[in-house]
Image 1 (cartoon, helix red, strand yellow):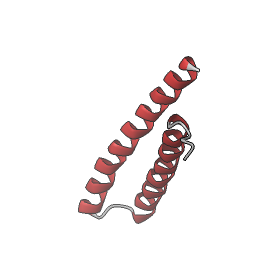
Image 2 (cartoon, one colour):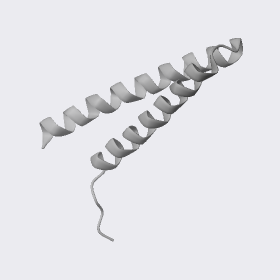
Image 3 (cartoon, one colour):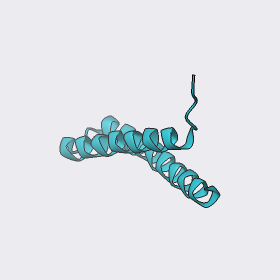
Amino acid sequence: MLPERDSLLRRLHELRSEHRDLDTVIARLEDSLHDQLQLQRLKKRKLKLKDEISSLESRLVPDIIA
């Protein structure tokens, strides 16, 4: 279980890093009014990353029986 957890944590770190990088890129593109299609694609990628991050986080949190 530990190697799988380490792998998930590594992937989670990579996704969060890419998500932060996209924040920066999107902010710069919005400020300079560049290609709207590219901006839209980046925002979709950011949303996809957010979904993947949420999914990984939920896999890392143990189920708690109430």
